[in-house]
Amino acid sequence: MTTAGELWVFGYGSLMWRPGFPYIERRGGLLRGWRRRLCVYSHVYRGTPEHPGLVLGLDRGGACSGVAFRIEAAQAEATLRYLREREQVTAVYLERIVSLRLDDGRRVSAVTYVADRAHAQYAGAMTRETMLKLVREGRGRSGPNAEYILATRDHLRGLGIHDPELEWLSERLAAA
Image (cartoon, rainbow, N blue to C red; front, top):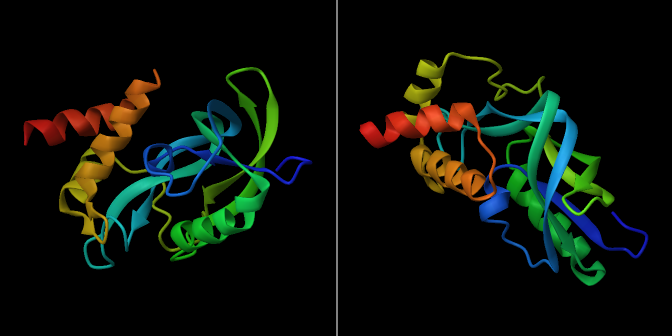
């Protein structure tokens, strides 16, 4: 957050390409100490408890490039309410305030959502073949899990970000 009451939000997955809230500035951002990882079983948006999908979470270690959105002060409360409803529907994500380095060199504090390693939906490490099986079978309220993987990979590519796991999965999904 900023001293003017504005809010920054850091997106690393679907928030990058489908934020769902109004913003007044969009910048690339780098978060250190956390990495983008397919480590969350989706039971709502891209899967069900019976056939979970697999979605991204921020997991400890490394660094993550993503998108930072600046929200005007008058919209900050409504944006946080929206994000909490969206990101914490099953409480697998923890809301955190993190320090980001924006692509123009500024350092800002931002709200983001990290994977809760103690939650039953935390998937942890798995083989790429297991990931592919979950993604192929996952379908939830927001549609097929494969659409999420492809859209996120495409958006990352557009930002010049290469994610080896999403690239590998996308190649196999396109070949199917």
